[in-house]
Length: 330
Image 1: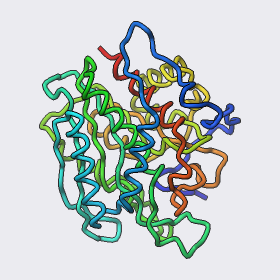
Image 2: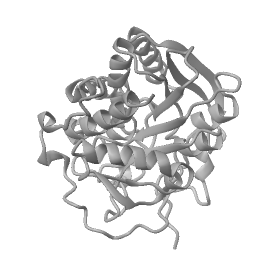
Image 3: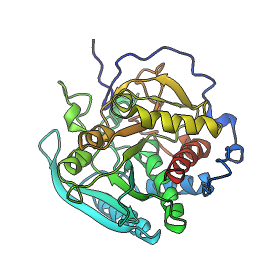
């Protein structure tokens, strides 16, 4: 029996031990340091955590709600405050049930004149259905999306703060994709993989700049749950194995090999798939749990995806690794 998990269908996960995978075993102060020959800003995990908390405090970021629209404005303003040239790609997209949804892709451009560019991304919306909650009465309730959405955005907002203050050698685009998590709920039968990631699907067909190019892309999705790991995601390996190698090697050098596990994981239909289809070799840094029922963290698509289950160490491990990768580019 095939089992569709959010926008995931595991192909062949090696059933390995979790390699001591525990974000709570280390303190934020234990984070490794970069190559001394490269000037890399110090990623502040507590600041990233606060950015996650601010998003969650705004409420459910479900497309079509007032909170969703207010959050889009706050994200654009915050990126602008950090020195980005801002674009908000607005459109109307159609959900799995035919509902028309407003979409706001938040696009922050740093050093837009630099043709040597890196693309970083996350999704900022939250899911309207807690369809994996253990209590069926909660299945049609929205989720707070602390990890599933806000965690990746929190890391990128903290990165934007550094990139705006001390520019790296490359130009950087940060795209916060919208309407990623409005995919068909569990009670809808059939192959619904194309009902997810509507914001990135739209962007891939309507690039924010004609002929837009980036050397590669890195997507962050669900990067804040304690005790979780990042495996080499299947489509990332297929389209951009050299970027997987670059990021995982950097993580190992910085002392984060316990969470960036050098083992193949599953195939996930996420925003990075459409980044790849747009011609930008891209990877997905996403927490997987091959021994769990869903393949993800325990609170995934439940009403318990809250700040109680966000670990600053995990945010710091991801942020420091990706920030180092960006600043080491020439």
